[in-house]
Length: 501
Image (tube, rainbow, N blue to C red; front, side):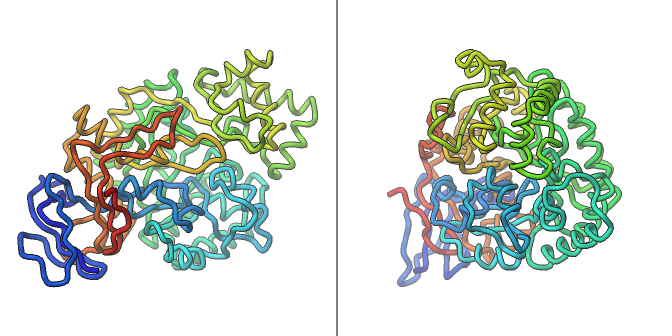
């Protein structure tokens, strides 16, 4: 059915001030914007007092498997498009035996043993039938390495490198919107710069985006930024720095020097931007705290090392030496068994006191007991630094959300309403038109999403209608699944996807 959104405050996604007008949706597209009488047979939706904006684009998501399901967590936030395949994890290209790929990615994908696609084309064909959102996908460097070399770390052979380049070419021509790395996750963490340079040259030739989870967000932040900027300079690829931040209190001072490098590169003509989420805490897998060499060979190899007292002691020493947070900053968010369910919501300092163990021993204990399937929430940032990144002219706002079998990060349920409510309406960190641009047109343009992200005739009818006085998220770290408030209607490809009424 065709729609007329009547008498709303239109904010078009380009950062311009809102204006009162109607939006006529015919089929999948925006037909007209203005003030006019509804044509015959059109359903009229009264938007008086509401903002009508383009549908929100979550440009950094890990819902690679869940976008294939009828999930409403993002739709209820006003999201109409998700960009998956981030941080080096994509559900393709799967090797003939997908088990190594599943083992590599299931901690982030919240997956089982039934998924895996041979190519970007195959995955995107299925994703095009998503009942919930539009799906764009980056091809992950970690997944490419798994396809050619399994869980082995270190430089690839010449033949393996050529195979990986061929798989990247195939993925980009098959519809992947770009390439992502996860340089803190094995096996991608072991890739030499020469390997990344060869791959980024391919991305540059295709004029697509390179999104990177860098080698460090802690004491090595500035060096990590410099490495990625140099890659972009040498290869001509368009650089997107994922979830930019300075993590751990001892490193908060490094954010400004890192931003200085990014700003100078942009002034010099480099195509660089970054994304961030509106929370001081992030979320990942517990194994990321380990020396990544301990993960060579996959999960069973890690567990074998932890079963050896000498190897376990060595891993604990290296983990503790490299640990830059306070132990109380790291909370357990999900475990694989009922045995440790009580650990969910507890931090490492608390668990150490309760168990009479050192915090680093709690890490290895849990990994052994849960067969390395543990997720964490890490309190990383300061409020001052968060404001600097969220309001920076080179930034866009994302969720970085993923599903867990336990207590998820609240960003999975509340990122975009929280951004527009708490940070924009209440704290006034940005104007509403600029805040909307950072979750609509800017990411759509950055990731090559055609005809999306703008509220203009000729664009696809992805639209979100919300109450600007009510929009927000009540989700907390303790109660992360509380649904957002203030979203009234979500329209995707011209169809009413969600209605709060």
